[in-house]
Amino acid sequence: MEETPESNKKPEENTEEIKEEKEVQQESEPVEEKIEEPVKEEVSEEKEIVEEPAGEPKEADVEEESEKPIEEEKPVEEPKKEAKPEEKKAPPKPKKEHDKDFKYIVRIANTDIDGEKTVIYGLASIKGIGLHMANLVVDATGIKKYDKIGDLDDKKIEILQQAVDSITNDAPYWMMNHRKDLETGKDIHLIGSEIDMKLRDEINMLKKIRSYRGIRHERGLPVRGQRTRANNRKGLALGVSKKRTPGQ
Image (cartoon, rainbow, N blue to C red):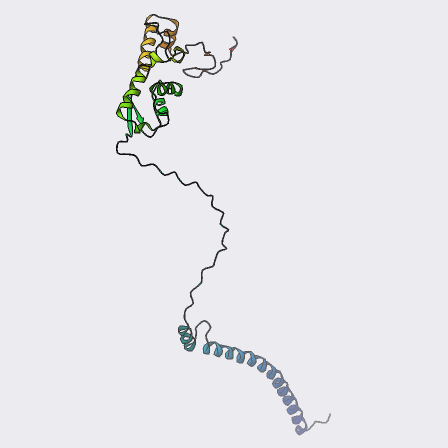
């Protein structure tokens, strides 16, 4: 085999090296471009952020805002409700001015009567006198029924007192409140504290004679025949007990 001269081998080796260098350069160039481009963008963004940081107003903006007047928030107007028509109330009756001699409290039959009341209703406030009996008393005296009892003179009040004391003699028997008295057997009319005293004395007398009514009063049981099985029960409530069988 003939040997090739060295001059021929060298250019071949040089060509191969040149090709390899070019390929390496071609491969390296796009990579560098790809890497450099995003880096430049990031740097530019950082510069922008540094130049104008978000959230911090400039001095000029601050001065403009300070010069502007602060506007007050206007309250929100609520919708007005339709006002209901007010009901007209009757004006209170003006009170009549009383004279100097007006008596605000009148005492008849050991009871205090309001002077603002009329004569007939003032007498009816006494214990033992109703409207019928008061009407009879006023008719007997001749005093006006619907005059205020506080406007009456002392003489008229004395006349009323005498008429109230003499009811037993003037009133018919069927208007009396205590007929057939146990002691006297007469029909009498009791007024005021006389009613309570007479009732207490009669109950004590029934207890002493040991009558049925007196015993019922002593035991606190109904006197006039009322039942006690369902009503007027006293003491502890007892439940229903079942009968026991001998085996239990």
